[in-house]
Length: 77
Image 1 (spheres, helix red, strand yellow):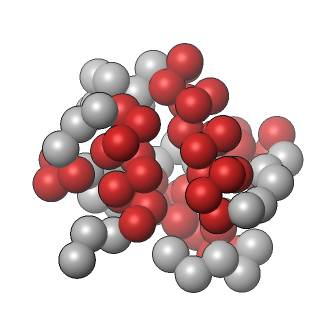
Image 2 (tube, rainbow, N blue to C red):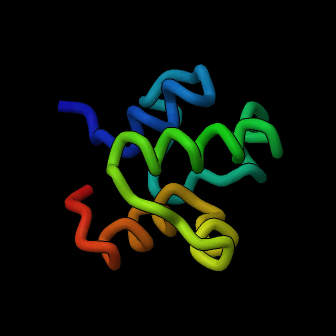
């Protein structure tokens, strides 16, 4: 079963989910540019029904940090 957060990132970035993990970041995923980052925020907010502050968004520099931010909001990911 695919991790729902990794799958979301894969869908938005249009990459194979097997290429992503909690350490994945814009530094090592070429598709993760500034436009993709905005799309990721919108997709995360929609899928997990949360609102992210600017501070929270800026902290999400890896998939793992995005996961931690969501868990702090009591989202199971």
